[in-house]
Length: 348
Ligand code: HEC
Ligand code: HEC
Image 1 (tube, protein in one colour):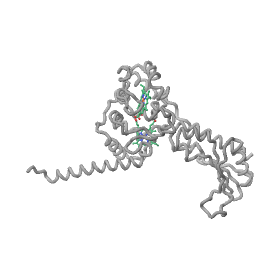
Image 2 (spheres, rainbow, N blue to C red):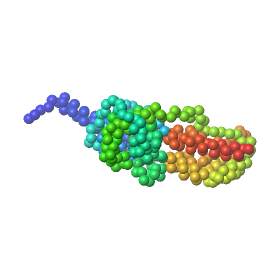
Image 3 (cartoon, helix red, strand yellow):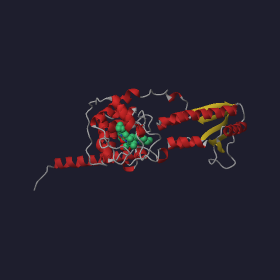
Image 4 (cartoon, rainbow, N blue to C red):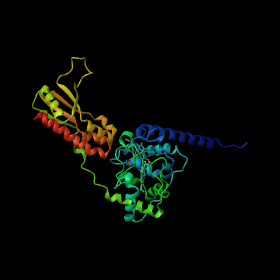
């Protein structure tokens, strides 16, 4: 009988169990870090699907690695700085287990087409979904937040994270292949020539030099804004209720901070929260990002401590930090102004 030395057998067993461990570990890390947005088995949700055969056939491991490490600033996809290189590789291994296609490898050679012609073609063939300047579709991938007609949100192509991750060759392969099961079609099948595709890729690359400068750091923004009131707690609450309605906000409820945490009737009357809401703002904000439910409706706390009455609220500009959604930024700035006006009126 054909005999294998015991060391070879042990080596194979070790290799097999290492492989099984890596897959298990990748799955575990995927469930921990990615599933909330990309769905079980990569079928998508707030994030684009990751299991589509055309995606896996055209996305290189390098592209995935850089996308996970650097994220997409301002486009919801976080940068996973805390994962080790090994962790990221295990996650990619797990994602690869959804498909039999071998990962493609691209050269880094730039494609030198005609950017001016590429721009014309881009406006004609791409802008309707990806935006005139490559800003991507509005909202997130969640149904309530994207147009019904689009089953999947078009990613931002002018995004620093995207441009740093995708090589010219990979963008070209995406345009030539398309991604079946999404609105992204093959442009060779749709009448463009390979030269046209090269021109478009060259134009998309110019977004790198056009990307807007980062806005001022929000780290300068305080997490909580506190103002002193010249009135008693009761008067301050009454004034805030008036300010809420004079600003066309609906008062939702007024409750003690410790309601439900202490015996009924024994609540601390010096610690009060006022919940209010403007349904237009709520609706707009939910369309941009359903996760704003975490800091809406508006809540203002009035509290007395050592004879001083304070009015405070969590700064919406800081809350937005965790969402990495640039469309929400201006909304959060507006919300901060709303809070300021409301409180200024109440403390007048
Ligand atoms: C908070 C939601 C969120 C989380 C968590 C998240 N992603 Fe994403 N991801 C997105 C969104 C949204 C996009 C598309 C960005 C755009 O629209 O421009 C994206 C894009 C991607 C892409 C590019 C896909 C393509 O079609 O080219 C990859 C790859 C990816 N994510 C992998 C991951 C992995 C792996 C994890 C976990 C380590 C993860 N993401 C966690 C939201 C998320
Ligand atoms: C009908 C809408 C639509 C049109 C038109 C369209 N795209 Fe897309 N595109 C999408 C969607 C949706 C995706 C995401 C597909 C996915 O999830 O895998 C996408 C993905 C991509 C990607 C991969 C980016 C990433 O982060 O995954 C590139 C590159 C791209 N499109 C470039 C273009 C270019 C260039 C054109 C014009 C020649 C174009 N697209 C036309 C909807 C469109």
